[in-house]
Image (tube, rainbow, N blue to C red):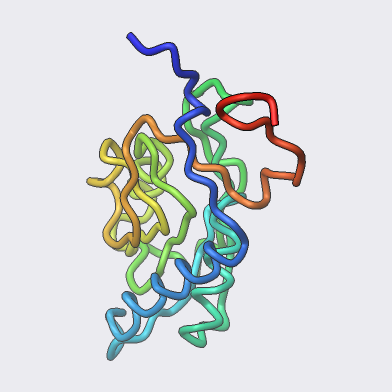
Length: 167
């Protein structure tokens, strides 16, 4: 057993880093769509997938962007994943040609739900933890299951006491 709190094994991601990693995701997806390499649309899993999806859509010149809102957390407690808002049904179909983007796959429960709805979509995340990796088709960086990722939209600048000592 460890005396370390879950957030103490943290991976801090800056705005600059999420931008670089999202561009790398776009490069990896470029030309991989089913329509002569093109994608029909990007669907962001809200809320974390919105920034990466916007960057991927810009880099790949995809003009059709929608969202799917899935709730699987209540503060830090996991709940049963449920869809709060679905993307345009006519556009989605079974997901063929659709690129679904999220910031992170953790346990895979969110992507598992979305994959059941759109089984032919391509699922891409910027970061992936081992438990969720089977649910994602493309990702950039793997992190350990016990690492807490601090995204820039969740953070504010403040003083942090040194690890050793007082100053």
